[in-house]
Amino acid sequence: MRQNLVAGNWKMNLTYQEGLALVEEIVRLNQANGAGPEVVLCPPFPFLTGVGQALPQGGKLHLGAQNCHQKESGAFTGEVSAKMLASVGCEYVILGHSERRQYFGEDDELLSQKLKAALAAGLKPIFCVGESLDTREADETFDFIGQQLAAGLFHLSNEEFAQVTVAYEPIWAIGTGRTATSAQAQEVHAFIREQIARAYDAQAALDTTILYGGSANAQNARELFSQPDVDGGLIGGASLKAADFTTIIQSF
Ligand code: 13P
Image (cartoon, rainbow, N blue to C red; front, side, top):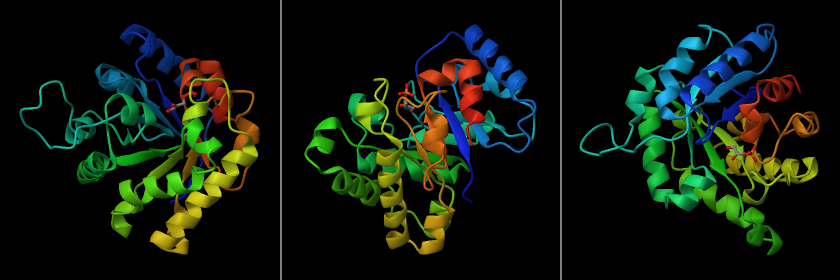
C-alpha cells in the first residue's frame, strides 16, 4: 500500500558503537511519531541485530539492509542471503542502488534474481533507479529510467510487485549536495507511476510508494515531499545525524 516512508541508508559509515548511539537517539527523538511516516533504518550488515534490538517492537521504525545475495544459501564466501536478513529482523532491503550497479557491476539480470530472492524471504525491496548526469544532459532520462524499470523490475508478478517500494535516485544528486529540484523529482516520479500503470494497472500505480533520494536533507525535504508523486525519501548523509533525520521524518 502506498505510504509515506523515509529510509536511512547508512552506506559504509560509522562504527557499531556510533551506530547504536545514532539509533538510540533516533528512537528517542521519534517517540511521538505516531501519525508520521514509516521509517526504515538500513545500517551495515554487522550492525543489523544490534540496531534491530534498539527499535521498539511494532512501531513505525523498521529495520532494512543495503543489499543481499541472490542465492538462498551455499558456498558464497563473504555474502549475506535474504533469508539471513529476515532471520535477524529485517523487513526491507535496498536493491539496485547506483553504487552497487557502478562499483559492483550489478546489472538488470542480477538485480532481477536478487529481487526474487528478497521476496521469497519475505523482505520488501526498495528498488532504486536513476540516471547519470550525462544521460540527463543528453535528454535521455525518461528512456533510461523506463529501461531500468522494464528490465529490472517489471518481470515481477502483481503480487510480488505490490511488496516493492521504488526509489528515484539521480546519480548526479547522490552525495553531491546538488539536489534535484522538486519539479525535477516530481516529473520523474510521475513518469515512474505512469510506467507502473502500463506494466501493471492504474491501481498498482496509485498504490506504489515512490521515494526520492539524492542530497535530500533537513532543509529541502518538505519541499520535495510536498510533490504529489513523492511519497518520501531515501536518505544517505543526512540519515547519519539524528536531528537532521528526524526533521526529515517530520517533513510531511
Ligand atoms: P545522499 O543523501 O548522501 O545524497 O545519498 C543518497 C543515497 O544514495 C541514499 O541511498
